[in-house]
Length: 274
Image 1 (spheres, rainbow, N blue to C red):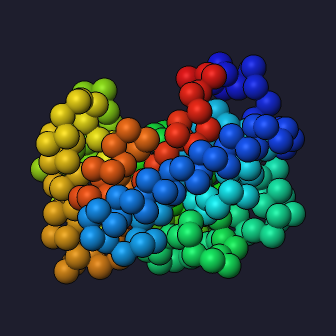
Image 2 (cartoon, rainbow, N blue to C red):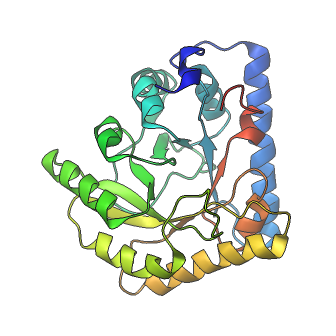
Image 3 (cartoon, one colour):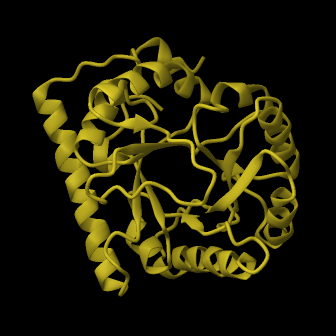
């Protein structure tokens, strides 16, 4: 168990009005940023989905974001998925939402489609083989698949449980050793190999932008991922999504074709725990 889980009740469902208001304002501010970025890039309004990154956030905080308009959430750690899944599902139902609708296609819930009652649930952090059972059948998509070995293990478990797991292939476009993801040069072949497996459904690609103060370099990585996605379309037509862009670089990601931006700090504020 991660250390901060000893200090915070992540299954807590209560939240005071002031904190809920902070989160609501954060969600609306990020949605406004996305809309402005879409317009600046000449993209259709609603073409980019906001994923709320909920690491260290409790169920009450997550529900405040959902009530404010978020329709896609992402957890970093399987341990948190395990702790939050049941109370979160129950709270979603009480608020008129279905958590993680199981769909075997590449679509994701759009956070701004009026009347949408589905809340998607992704794993966006690294997944060890011994933690697969904690997330399989709970999250609809695993965004952090960076090797054939991991994909094969997910496939084996999914088939055994009669499930199909959505996956994104994570690519280390920045080349930074601290970041996970497969080598960009290997990504094309890796996607094709994973696409041949039973029990998994390749929905898209994911990357983390370069941690530098250089717009050109950040956008170069995002642009390359888009080009990779485009090159895969003929053989892997289900690979449509591009999960790229976070609090500090989402405008660059939208400009380069992102379909999902993963935002935590700008919604919830700085993390109290790491």
